[in-house]
Length: 187
Picture 1 (cartoon, helix red, strand yellow):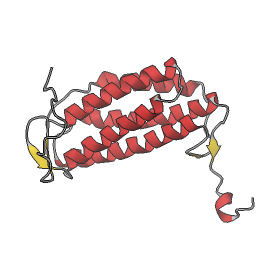
Picture 2: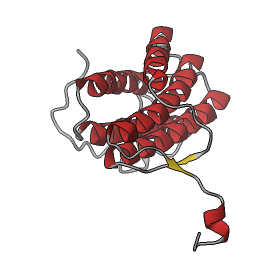
Picture 3: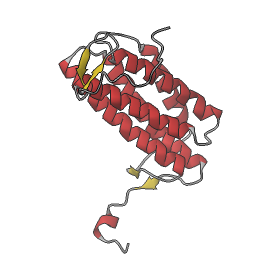
């Protein structure tokens, strides 16, 4: 096992830098740290979602996703590192196919909302998209595995389908976008 934290504060980041997994010190707002932070934020909102009563058929895959996101953080913390494997994308796609098969086809855009769990899931989806953008920014500047980008892209799709699944399970259904509402609030 790696380093054990004996103290939480080290004071080494007081100068606006942070240490990466390879020991290199970088600015806290560099592209690599921004990508790491977005993936960490995504993992944290999934923790919030998992605090809701989801049932094991939905919760267990999300716990696996959290572990993969932690692996992805490790990968991003060491330039050139490859930890997340293609099979993780295949697992997401299998879940997507299974969960989406139980939903009605979409004919309209939907709004984030419905049940509390679906709303949290939509928030996770939007944070996932931000993480994907941050990793892509890093990808354009430095070495990043394209698997990381594909994983985040597929994960955001999965979270969209999961939000719909949660709304269906909660009896709320999808919240459909109604463009006329913008023009005439009395409609």
